[in-house]
Length: 279
Image 1 (cartoon, one colour):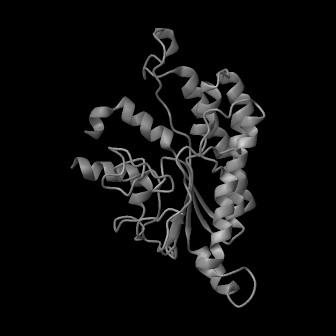
Image 2 (cartoon, rainbow, N blue to C red):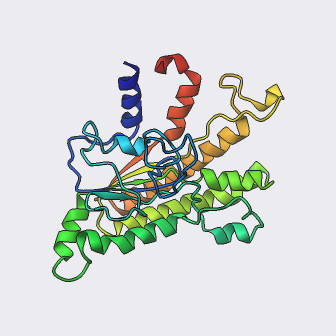
Image 3 (tube, rainbow, N blue to C red):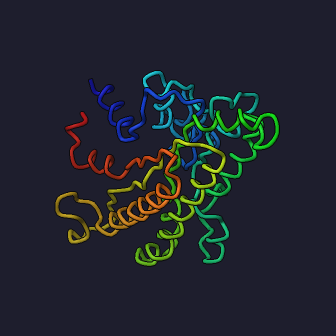
């Protein structure tokens, strides 16, 4: 019962139509969905799941199993001698949404170690597509358009590594909010838009997580009901509000594209508030 309930939670907040048969699944993001682009060999990581940072399955894995959209597990973009015909994963552990230059300019590059921003992941996607479904011109152009119009893109989570870099680098949360959040949500929207220009017509965008942080002994620091740090919750709320605003803008601009928003924050917050509900 617990396993079935967990699977329902993981898949239901993506709200994907399981009756829709997709040609391929393309994923972009950070450690929450990296299935092996960054390999970690020290125990307990990767004992049963291919050297990934998680030794268990991730949310993206559940989208490919028979109960999901009936696609095989996504191979990482860096995999050798594998087929990407049914999809590929461009997510990297520790990937920031913004390019390294943004942090170098602010003296915040010390904690960065994986240079795989939104734009770099989308660039990898564009360079790989001709080997999967042909080029936009020539004899394969109609096949490419039809193939991608029936493919699914999952975009995110992005932003957690950026916010951690700023906050642990000594910036006040107010500055991270005003400087980082608009740029990060804009970068996500730009990456989403580039993926659509390849003819993809189904997209799932994932909001920010991190709803509960415990770093102070001052009771006033925390919400009275949740027990979670107020200002970090507010940062996640603001990120997700701006991301939804960007997605609404894109919905108006691209009415033929099916866009869905997956709310990690609300689900994880519900886990924290109602642990007995989930076993």
